Image (cartoon, rainbow, N blue to C red; front, side, top):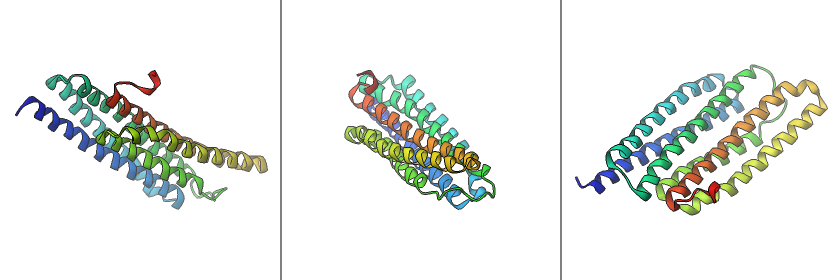
Length: 218
């Protein structure tokens, strides 16, 4: 098989694995938020095994990328594509860790009645899940516009995060006994906000893979 055809085949293997990892992470975020809203602690416990599966996927993709770098000696744009994938899987793995952290906090609520309706947090989750999906799709499709659009989408997640914080501060001011639960909700919102940030990071590595310039270095 010609070197170029072999490289393209191996890179497609990386793309396919990234897409699978992304779908798994999307489902994990959805599951941890469902566990929170429905107070389903058995579902929350499943997230811990899901996170282990993501860790395995990260290692497999890393091995594929390193194999390409060592065996195929990619140059210029090809090298950037592979090195960007290595950076992206780190962000994806951290996203999975944050979903696991949300599941862990959910279990800490026990049987306590919630001090507030869980409204803005699921809305944040919808946005950041789409961001994760778009960030990986931008890489696979080499879609620079989609990668750069992640910043604006992240603004929507940040706006909801600020709403959650304002609401939580108000609840504590009204009744200091709300503080313990309020802090848990704040932490969950913060983890979702971080997931959005990781998706933006992935978008920046997509831009680097396409243009050779990383936005933070411009």
